[in-house]
Amino acid sequence: MSDAPADPRRERVDGAPRREQILNTAARLATVEGLDGLSIGRLAQATGMSKSGLYAHFGSKQELQLATIDTARQIFIKVVVQPALAAPTGVEQLQAACEQFLDHVEREVFPGGCFFSSVAAEVGGRPGALHDRIAREQLDWIALLQAIADEARDRGQLAADTDTAQLVFELNAVVVAANTGFVLHGDPTGLERARHAVHRQLKDAATTADP
Amino acid sequence: MSDAPADPRRERVDGAPRREQILNTAARLATVEGLDGLSIGRLAQATGMSKSGLYAHFGSKQELQLATIDTARQIFIKVVVQPALAAPTGVEQLQAACEQFLDHVEREVFPGGCFFSSVAAEVGGRPGALHDRIAREQLDWIALLQAIADEARDRGQLAADTDTAQLVFELNAVVVAANTGFVLHGDPTGLERARHAVHRQLKDAATTADP
DNA sequence: CCTACCGATCGGTAGG
DNA sequence: CCTACCGATCGGTAGG
Image 1 (cartoon, rainbow over the protein chains, first blue to last red):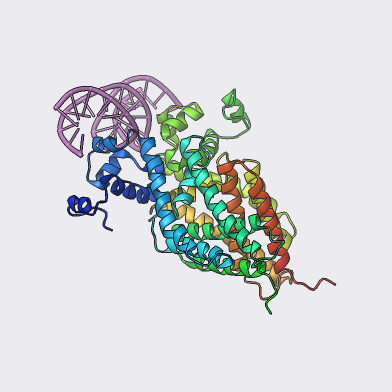
Image 2: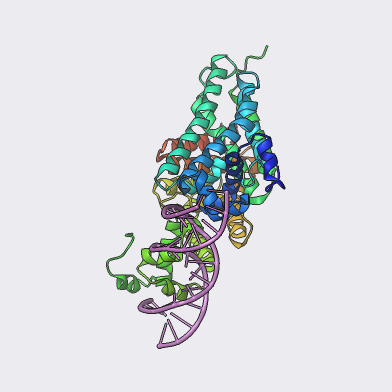
């Protein structure tokens, strides 16, 4: 949990390789300093290693950045996606995905908020391997929400004429906006508004036949 | 319009001071490279000046960055806010504000999309003068939308029990999400979804008494 | 995984 | 607004 373990060897005993420890630090740092602002020197300092020590693990800065994205993805899957998928399939799962996303922002899993929102803005307008990788992750997230929404509709929990792509666009929009507001203003108001919006959206799209 | 005017003296004739020309370039560059990635050397190259020539205009990088934000704000006011305020007060104006925002994204007024969305992600998690300035601009934009929404409600165009803060949060969320999608994927689909969402939101909040 | 080093670029200054 | 320069840091390499 701490930034710099008192005794690095204890990490080894846990079986957590040094590489993962470095990448965890890198992923959290990148949400504050950016993927580019994450310099090898700074990361070396943050992990208590020398710069060339890092180059033993990663051949180049871009390799480090790509590995960092992959680590962030794994963290996101573990703390957002998997808990969401543990919810009952359908509307509940869709709501859980939004809720878990908001929770991971509020719990500050990454100090700079959602890793992918943060980094997407950085590489959005710049072509290259980082851009392509981040764009793909974003599409995967949307595709996941859509698959859940489609399932909810197929199960008759959402109206048959629900435009699930539109619904998912709007759900993602409000949770991401909440992330931005929380990071920029340190204010959870947006998180509450997002929860409110998600709840209403799902209620509005739900099949009205209750009896 | 062009990145590097053939004859810089023509700009002078127009009465556009060199400083403004530099800052216009800086504002557009910052949406791609970031406010930090915008180095003095790169900006010097982009404007055809020497580094120390820039220091004659701006005492430090932070001064340049703050001046760049101010220029971006003026551009935003000119291309988004003022056209929106030209629309009839009330719901139409609220719709116009959203529409003008989406238009300025689609027209690529800034090559990296909305300046403030881009920069907010960069400085969001970092304390300092840049953060505070960007946070203020974001609050101003939300306050503007809210003032318009309140007016629309006071005029009876929106239901009296409309939660305008919630409405504005959701409107802003979808237009910003459209910006992100357009920049990241070069795909206008999100812009259409945002227009659709804005239209439906305003329709839902409208007073149902039509006859 | 380290020390020691490379050329390039960073923000910034002196002096004009 | 320029040339010429400063120390610091960048990404990366040699050699171990």
